[in-house]
Image 1 (cartoon, rainbow, N blue to C red):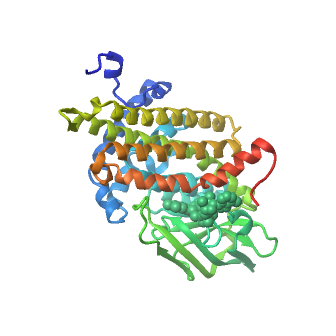
Image 2 (cartoon, rainbow, N blue to C red):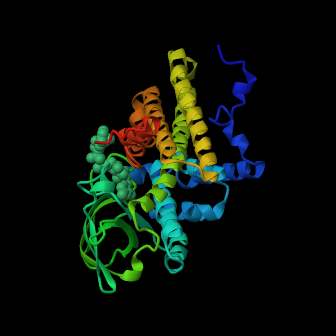
Image 3 (cartoon, helix red, strand yellow):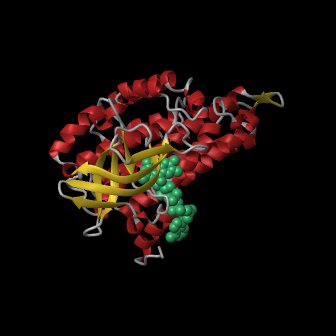
Length: 393
Ligand SMILES: Cc1cc2nc3c(=O)[nH]c(=O)nc-3n(C[C@H](O)[C@H](O)[C@H](O)COP(=O)(O)OP(=O)(O)OC[C@H]3O[C@@H](n4cnc5c(N)ncnc54)[C@H](O)[C@@H]3O)c2cc1C
């Protein structure tokens, strides 16, 4: 029997609890425009680039022109900004990673920790997309324990800093004009931030090959061999690891929106397929077990939206803590991962395809689950907040 619930039939979007109605009518309209533009610019072409591990420069340029080149210039409303980031992840997770790096890590670091001169030098070109940057924190031997274990060093020599060491997994690393590099000052042992121009002698970036997630993002191994930069390229306000955490708190807290967008994309594709695919003489959408899979994804999405909204409220009030950001990150990325598996399962064999199926999302959510702190590391942060006991060691 087909549904007679007119309210259900009128659902135009996968946002069952209608969170989008918390936006103004103008914002909802703009969001619909952006969604339509992304469906034209990104959706038909992106799987090809993804399958070839290539960065689609022309697609990224056109996405940038929609306002993603400088998202905080597009809106000052953090809730709308969250929905905008979700729309991009809904079209493609890799591109949302690229623009999150561009805006939330590189742009945000320069804005929050740079001097006025550093901002004037680097932000206009960054936001005009004349170039992009990367954020180099993780190291080959220090991922989760990078705060205490960072081995990359910076040494002050006259009016220069000399950087030595290695970084790993650095998104945009092979195609950036500047790198925000975190290194331990040999003199006071504190982690400091530096702007390194990537054509400086001694800087070498090598693409990490054979990735199976966010394949469009060009992640790199970077080595620094006596890289000499002018003293004025030290980020003015990046003097301890706590300063890095200011940036990571914001980006981690915003990650829920990437999980929202990914699940919107997953539910879009799964619902469409369920309505189109016929087995045993009826659309598979009419089979109870198929509906159960769709409902689980929709429920995960609604829960993720709730957490992402609350995270934005806390951040806007200037009250978000790392415990809260970690809880949002670990749970939303876990639900996202589950939704990708359910959607892929629901689409049968076609589910593993990168273009018409959910193969791309299925692989890409593994990256969301891992970066900005793994599930375990974020659990330890929340556990410490709940109990007062640190269980890291
Ligand atoms: C696609 C992608 C993009 C990335 N982009 C960037 C980037 O642009 N810039 C950047 O600086 N970094 C980036 N990263 C790095 C990312 O932040 C790290 O991968 C992440 O912090 C985990 O570090 P690791 O991979 O070295 O794993 P490890 O730290 O080696 O962890 C391995 C396993 O051990 C577990 N573990 C570690 N410590 C504990 C503990 N105390 N208790 C229990 N379990 C523990 C972890 O949870 C994990 O399961 C990226 C990573 C990926 C995959």
